[in-house]
Image (cartoon, rainbow, N blue to C red; front, side, top):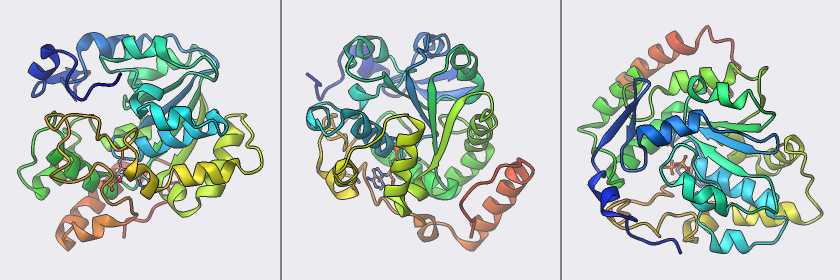
Length: 301
Ligand code: A3P
């Protein structure tokens, strides 16, 4: 069973703690140095599929899509297994108990928010497939800002302006968005990596899912695309306890203050950024990403 309360008092005691790993802050609620080190030493199998994201880039959405691609229309896991049990985060403390319970009917589907520097050495020892999902950083930031207000294991931001500053400096939880994206996309030639964006899944879901299934070597049969599209829609996911985090207690995520599946749109940053903040963000974005040589699909205005 997947209980709605922390598994142990140890977990609730860790609610407000921070783990610093390689200079990056992680919520101590679900990370320890031991669990983070174990992730970096994880033995990937050639058949593994690892989803990597910076938080709030559409992780849960892609977990749903990947589960749907592999379950081939047999929807039991979609209706009965929470996303974190279907596609556990390799760096979290719960991973060691969730890993043995993964279905043997399809590849091990795994998730991580770790940066490339931490995970690449372990990954390079295998031919595991990596799906790297990114989102316009302004929208990821806005989503993360709201998430900090409902997640008991993250501090409440003092203001939106301060949150933007921290994001631009890369000193917030899970580190720098810029380093995350540059690090992972810089490994496209070294890893078996497929780059996908929140925006393309939003704008061209069918085409994006087809490209994913080609990369995964898992062709979809007639009608399967429609089943996938239905079950990864914002409305279906908002109402599904298996992906909307309603199974977690109020202490962990308090959805009376705002939903985990909040808006699910592209461009919500425009409702949050003042022209001054936007200018500041664009200047830092340009200085950090301008010479990256990466072809990123979003515009900053
Ligand atoms: P918003 O806060 O902008 O609404 P993550 O899973 O990485 O934490 O990302 C959460 C973000 O993805 C939230 O963004 C959430 O609403 C959005 N999301 C989740 N499922 C979605 C879906 N089916 N369609 C569109 N957006 C979705």
